[in-house]
Length: 268
Image 1 (cartoon, rainbow, N blue to C red):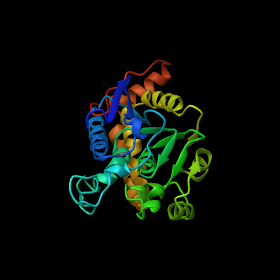
Image 2: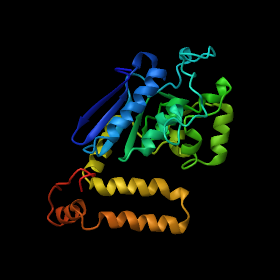
Image 3: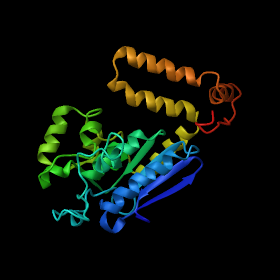
Image 4: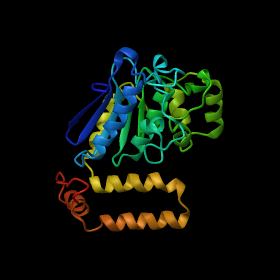
């Protein structure tokens, strides 16, 4: 899996590049394992405060590499049992998208070229998505007689109307960046998705990493909780922040109009 995903870290920001440009970053088995391993590596690095996820070359990700898909039953991309929970609540297929939602720090996707099928679902795992106006996107699975199964059904439902999801799933129609933003697949339309994603990542990295991590945790859980549970979780997480180094530093750096000196979020 060496080289399938590249990670560059600078100033607490990790740039994660899907790195199979000759195949439009299409997903083969090595890419699946490399993406999952990359997310694990990032989770273990407490110095990282934001992640930018992008594709090398002419595309973000063209989806499954069909040349890796067969029905021979061994040593191909679909040889693993789909129903087995091999990665927490997910299987291997789902983990490549769900891992970005699970990651403690915010993930910002910079999307260009094509973003089809599995690529679209990986994009949806990010917290915030910048997409170029000419990007082509599709819930492509129906074209091959299957359904979206890389966590897409769970990720789409948070931001996109059910009827829109159903239409685009049933037809696998290709749509462009402006429509992606209109429907909620993406957050922002951008002529320079990577540049804009990095600007936002730097802004996020300048805030208290403890507060950012706990904010993502609470916001991810909120749609699944009853009101009482959600209010309690909000209070519990806030209690863990108050009067700790990073919270005090955030307060005083603002009052003193200086750059904050935050600790890594697991140390504060």
